[in-house]
Length: 228
Image (tube, rainbow, N blue to C red; front, side):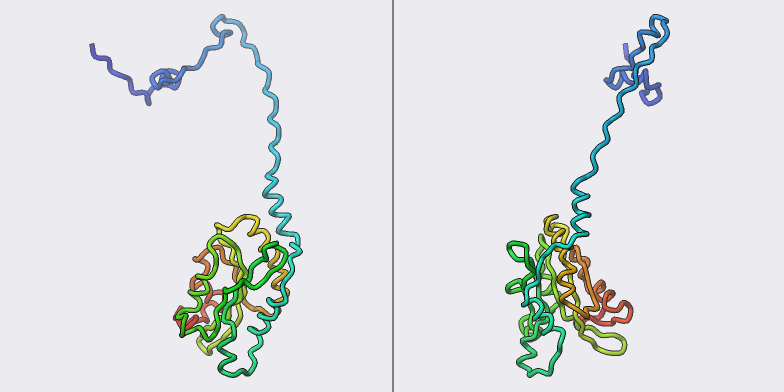
């Protein structure tokens, strides 16, 4: 004899559960015996879950000054990049086009990261695209500060202006992000007169179109010699 299985989807839940291998609803013993059903006691209220302490700590930490100091060399480099004195061709070549700053090993001072710089004399000689090279110097898994001497063109003139960067990639440790974010004001106070600031969390924030937008939006027609 052939047994035809019913269409489970069309059955009421109480009848469909056994076909799915699940126990059906139990009938109350009170209903079986005809006695009046008893009201069970209400379950005790669930205890309130404590607030996310980590999230609170991040918020509080971000509002606090980190106490990090800024090395004198950082201030000197900023002054040299900002003040464009009449210099000889050899002195101009030694001027910094870009420089990266990091926290010291003990996390107490912002210093110049050794070997992470671009000189004006390198552009067109050993470095073809200075901005691309600058982005390549930033670490994938840690935060940094940076100064970049941006060269761009508007519809009327060619300009060079400093940009301040806070690099905080997604893969950076949470503690590093917190310290760099809370120490940003400390280093910015040492860089008076900076017009342009960029906080980047990934390479997509450092494309030419994004930088041109921060420099002047639709007024910018070229950045580092490339149309935008």
